[in-house]
Image (tube, rainbow, N blue to C red):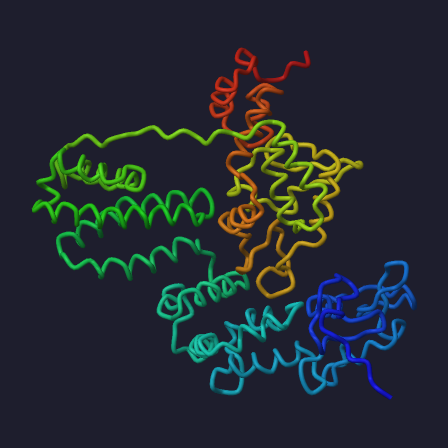
Length: 487
């Protein structure tokens, strides 16, 4: 009897209906892709068949979840070492037990025990809900090298000590884990990364006089400003990138003067004009260096050219409404991206503020959903209210050691950190979403519907900003007096 050969194009995941490769897991309901198979074996809850709290990878006909016994034919998922139900990694042992074994090895201080100061990090990694991430991370040679250096005391367990390790991206990730687990005191990670970059950048400047000027500029202007911003709140990637660009342009400007046979103390207006003629927009951040140099008497007074930059033209109201309809109807767009886009289009929020929102800012009271952007909280209309509530229950990046108990609305992949605004912007850009123009359209529409002070307080804007936008949009609330008008 001939056997029927299953073609690859005939294999589709029984849950997400995507094509699966030959050799994929085959359960009674059909083939499962790698993603659905992994999610199934990370699902715990009450079995709808036997009502027992345990691993529930199976699906019931009514949409509920079933344990391995009630579903039948799924396989054996009991760890032979700890007795817990979970996906087994090797030799019948679950991923958590394998990860614990590896952590005991890399955290060994040389005496067969774990360094006491690192026990909180050890427990955080060992107890992660998705041990596969920890196994992948700790399998990297540079990660094992850095962890052993800390465990054996070869590297001081301080922020300064971590700065001696490489590569810097992996060290930044490790630093976040150490701060989240309480091993290291809190510090602004963006500022620390900038300091590390600065220490590597300045020695590359060959001219001693230029390097001395740049060291003073970095110490008395750039880092001073970053410290002030860090005191108000965590630094953003854009703020640090601007600081780097200012130093890059300062180096380039000094090189421009050297080519013209001049030192900074001999700089003239002609030299400055020639510099900006080469591209004003790209060199606009040179303003900071020039103004600092003039204040510090390192160069004579010159006029720094200024060219006004206007915001991009906002999208039309009908385009804004069409985008909102698209966000409701397109289930193929990730819910995370749809929620972020709605916060831009409905409440004119910049991505820097959206990234810092927490789940506590979403309030569900008496059947109404509110989002706290200012005072008072803003109501969320249907059907966006349901989208927001659904998303809070399935936020990503909460299954590893980085953000297991995160309260961020958009948890990131760094320990204790939300998703960066740059990441959110990139995701929305891939969808063809006009973030800045959509936000401008939203705020202009809102200030035409309500007084500028009211909009400012509810959305967290400054009164002057909304008043200016109202005037630009031709609003009629110019003489509105804010305050309590109930009397």
